Image (cartoon, rainbow, N blue to C red; front, top):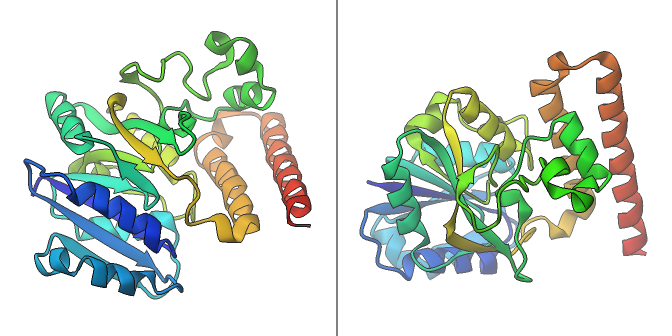
Length: 291
């Protein structure tokens, strides 16, 4: 088995169906399996998916795991990886569509360089713009401040670390982090770094995983020769306030884990207050949107 594709479903029947369709419509030269992990969906989506793809369930190309509770993105993916038989694993969002030969291109590139710890493709949003999460720098206090103050718009080369603006969107190169919407790596590397940190319920777990991979001496490669479309936020639109909380909580978890010991108390206090202020601003804006 060459590749195990892990997809987490949460109340996204139409999107998940679209994602799986984009995988199986092509004739891949390698053996692969899809492991679909359902996070206690309440919309009947998993039953509809079982019925829609019953042929590939029977052929054991699609395996379905049903969680009794919503365990979050990180834990659900870890569960899926435990069942994976592939040499490589692909963490793939349920709101994505693979473009032509995406998987083939990525596998070939991975096998050319054994020091690639994780590979990400070019991710395009539904509006045709680049999803900047597909190539990022780590959110150090300095990089985050530049981004928050929008200095990267004035001088991308000097202040664009947060979005890895040193690298063009069509240029192949190393970055700090890629998005968990499409993250390809060997199962050996995933296991070596301990998988996804389950302290992250949603958001941040992909950056944390990349941080651990780089700490082990591997490269994170942005590979725009392969492309996907990302219909972003498909599983999180219905609980907007919870999404805002999870996003900002992930920022603080990441800082505590990787940066708190490296910076002074004053810097940590500024970071904490900055995250809280941004959280309150987003909640305030969200409140007015719902009125």
